[in-house]
Length: 118
Length: 112
Image 1 (cartoon, one colour):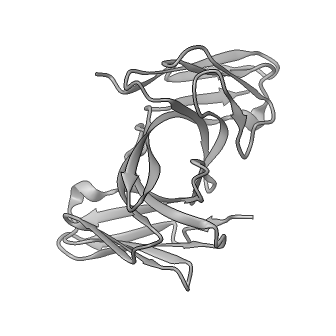
Image 2 (image 1 turned 90 degrees about the vertical axis):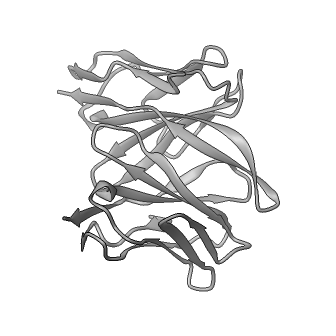
């Protein structure tokens, strides 16, 4: 049981290049998320997928596209990388748990992909 | 506009003493709050949570307090251990949206 896995761990791109960050989870979770973490900014939601076949924009979706390939996999694509997209990217998945008379989602994060755009 | 704020970027505490990490929020629609812990080169891991119908939740050495009128929550770690040294993020979720807003994090260093 690997949890949430991300590939690659580290990538260097030149401005204008494209790439896809891969994420997979083996916990049979319905929801998956992509975040970016920048110094002094915390984690910001880029896109999320509440269930297979659906995707929605988060706080900072510009410059990114996503694909929920199946229940396990959720990829993030940068079509034309920019230096402002230099960041650490985290994928997460979540399941529903009952907590204090309501349903909540507990997120499980992958180890991250460190991206440098020159 | 930062809806979830952690105003202390760093905190140093002696081993065995109490660590108190603070978090403030501005959106009164938030009704579920979480704390995550993050070690370098790893993803955040869930630590403890609290819903707005409670003002306190405990799990071993970790206690989260919620003051809704002040829109403030805090994480207490007692006693602090060197292995607790990490970055701690608070996060908030509103009304079943399942989207979490994270604070900027506080780096805790527990000195042996």
